[in-house]
Image (cartoon, rainbow, N blue to C red; front, side, top):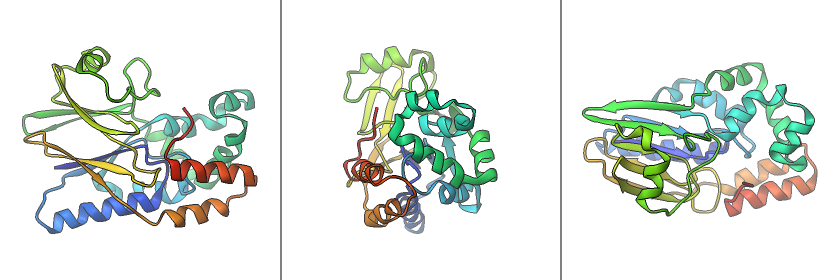
Length: 245
């Protein structure tokens, strides 16, 4: 068994709840081998804590595939103000600037070094491929609720894999001619975040909805040194679970 989550958005309380559930499953005799995060960083205000957890002892069972925000943070200091505004908009520039500072030297170094575009793993006889986005555009998540032919066309080069795990906002599992496409849904935003559990032998997929202290995240947002309008925007993203495209 493995756990897969996507779009964590640096939401430390959400990650802590998922890891707590994984530990409970282990105590109940379920062999959860690893946790895979498809994009760890993002818009929520725990970049430093997220980095420390992922780089520390708890991170040993966790593998991270870089997503849009991970790659953005990795190159943030190399971008001009014009490029930053084009990528995230003027309002969120202050947020990413602040998160860049909050990561500190070691955190920024770690993020730059973890920017894997994909991870390929083999469990017994089944091969898994973990990625954030499309092959032709790693920052673009696949469309949701599409027929199998859509995913077969988008991931045709990955036909050797039994499971292709991708990021997205809504959870889904689609059987195709090239393998099973699994999206765990969004883990770090919204009132009903989700993650996936996949049996690595039978390929059975289940989706877990969980809750955590979302008010704790809102309170942390209120403490950020950014304009009030930006705080309201981040709170709206947190509760609605819909970041900008």
